[in-house]
Length: 252
Image (tube, rainbow, N blue to C red; front, side, top):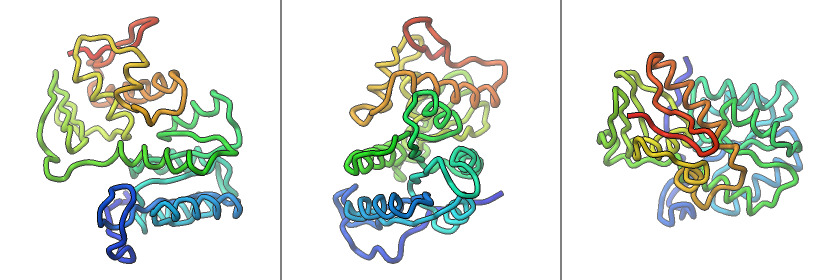
């Protein structure tokens, strides 16, 4: 299995990183799009905001770049010359939890939901405002960032499920469950209030906050994916229940 390791960017030097506001290695974003006009625009927009950009023009190139460059986030177009972005997203999720922003010229809700179901964290329809692109990438990075100093502090534990909040890790019956940043945030929000019903809007506020750009149905897609992952680790347990017409509840 491909092993993805965090890497420092030796070319970054001491350049100021706008995301953090302090001297840090540049945040690396992998941009995957075969349209040279779109790719160049996205690259210029992100670089202007202080990101380091790695480019790929196909699904095969994207997977090689993921292994080689270990990016902090990915901007992935749905239409690629050798495969489609949805298939690439599925392949990426087998080896990495890098935050993924999917781009598409199709703006229908059903198409967005398919992208979220295969593992994308967010979805942006073309044409888009460059400032919104940067805002969404920043939001994904904020949600996925973790604190190394407290990485293994146990904060929440219920019925065999343990959430290492600072480290953003989850174990069920001693088995680590790999979650995307948004799935982790949703589980944390629910498990922090066991037995209490949280509406979709509550979950949007807690997991996405002011960074949210989509619709409430997005919550349902991520909750479904989250439930499936937890069920694989604990088939006899149901940690999250639906409350019809209201939202979701964590069952302690």
